[in-house]
View (cartoon, rainbow, N blue to C red):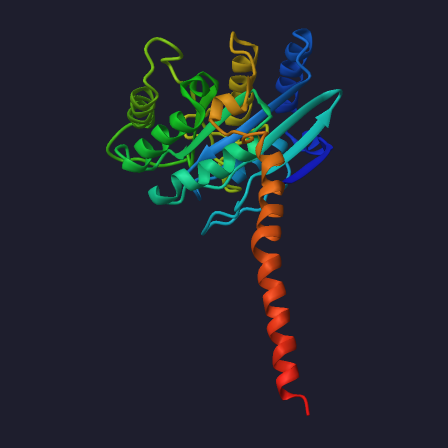
Length: 296
């Protein structure tokens, strides 16, 4: 059973003042459109920083993080509330290697069954390989597990974005890396014209990340990344994309034949009457006869 944690969004007050102003503006936009809650699901390989994103979104340590391995072994749901608005983030097990993609997705989609999702954050490292067969397998598996309708709700998040390059400019590297992953997603999702842009955001969760004069974490190009991430979330939620319900039809999980709950007890009863009870009687009879033969 997945863990659910819901509290007041106290970490909000710990954000830099400039960031708080932007988030208050975004919350006002949501309230104006009568949106009082957002649910986000994080998907991606293990160890790419999904749990760190959870902590950054809430500006507090709510998810366990390890620099050496994935700490999330099952889906974990975290919720925080502020001024009538509820933010829910569902952290999921990582796809550590290609062989675990299907097993991990089966676990995730069973947990998500019946939940309404606004945004999916597909997380990968910015400094990862541009041509990765695991990315192909993951994108294909996500399409098969949830259907292509999941992709219009996806924002790609590149972690470890504070990288220093010598042979190429930062913007050029980001452009190449994002284009490579975007092309994989477009191919495996079989997009035609829907959401062909596949938006992406760069983040750097490291505590040693560079800061500006307002104590906001910035990327090598000076971008304050946390407000940009929240802006991308709000833009997608307030866009034309309605929240998506993860139901049985979407993911192909059936509750089973309702007649099974009727027939199974009858089958077990028939087995008891026709098989096990006669066997038990025969055993008891043999025991009695054996006891009589050895009695003085």
